[in-house]
Image (cartoon, rainbow, N blue to C red):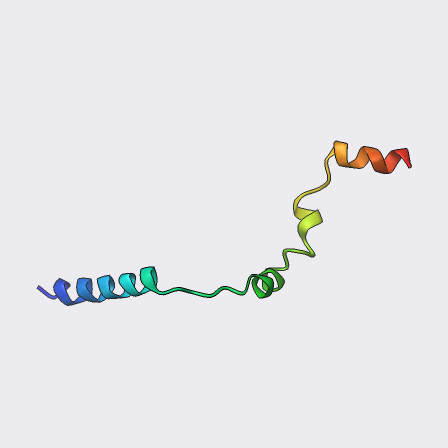
Length: 56
């Protein structure tokens, strides 16, 4: 019998999350995640990208 209030609160919170417009600072997020500094570690260059470097 106590499930009704809990479900109503969950529904209310879900509605707020769905219809509230969130502003995301993508630059700050990128800095926090360290995406720029670890890009080369995560995605090593392929052979096609390395070929022009060898030719020089």
